[in-house]
Amino acid sequence: MITWELRLFDQDGGRVATFAAWPDLVVKLRRNKPATYALRLSGDDVRAPLFELDGILEGWWHDTDNGIAWRREFTAWTVDKHRWTDSKGARHFVSSGFGLVDLLRRDIIDAAAGSAETRKSGLGETVIKDFVDEQSGPGAGARARPGLIIEADHSPALGTTWKGQRTNKYVLEVIQEIAEATGIQFGIERTDTYEFEFRCWEPTDVRGTVIFSEERQNMGQPDVQERTSQSVTNVKVSGEGQGDLRETLYLVDAAAAALSPQNRREAAVDARDQETDDEYEARGQKALDANKATQQFAFAVKQSVNALYGEHYELGDLVTARYDGVDYDRRIEGIDWHVVANQAPLPNVSTVEVVEDGS
Image (tube, rainbow, N blue to C red; front, side, top):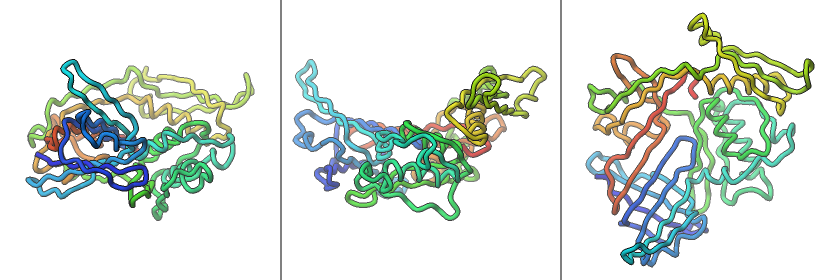
């Protein structure tokens, strides 16, 4: 069993409570999304009032049996509270909240269309950090989030090239789109009492060493399904203008269209909010990427001494899944915990397919 500890901090980042036991805790971690947690305590717990709006809750765990030292699994803003008395007269309290990147779900890209703050072109890491800095970080002026700083770009900057214009959308929504298109992962790390650093990185590739298969007894219930019926191979992108004068661009996934004599599958995309050919192409490519034929491969991850979360792989890592003699590239997409008292078995792990462009 794994042993957990919860550490609660106030709005200034000072520790106000440490929890060694509690009735129930559920934690969900997802790549490039805010973590979520729900912690249930007794309604009579004197520490319940310490959960103030946008305090900080950290979850730490260690696994002595497998030699994993104390590690911080999540850091979250404490946001919602729920108190009630059940039919037996027992009082309950639940605190729930979201990981630190939830800050970027609270801010929009507040700049005029076509401005330098909304139109971007560059490597994924640079573009993502520019949006975050200008709308939530030190570059946001009076809108800057307290304590939030931006990590300097790697040298060279990470990811493939992205071009486009985005305005009046949530910062998190936009950078999730860019990260998916350019092969980037991101997060916010608490680095000091009340200092938070926005960071980008590329996924760690452990496909050569972390292999899930029935033979290795770390794969359960494998299920493969191929779907072509909802795919798109040809996209018409319509930009500025009216009628015959409207800007039009066509994109084709030639390899997919050639899979059969009748596999041309068309779709139209509206891009009137974009202005350049590069931006039209990016909008059309997004539609092609989102509507590719899929080969869905689902399986239950079983923790094992040779493929152990926290020791051999982490959230977002690239791993191998082997079934019926075929190797599939997978990415660790989700980690789910259910912690009772302060102990939990190993987590439930979910994976998704990795496509060739790394997204």
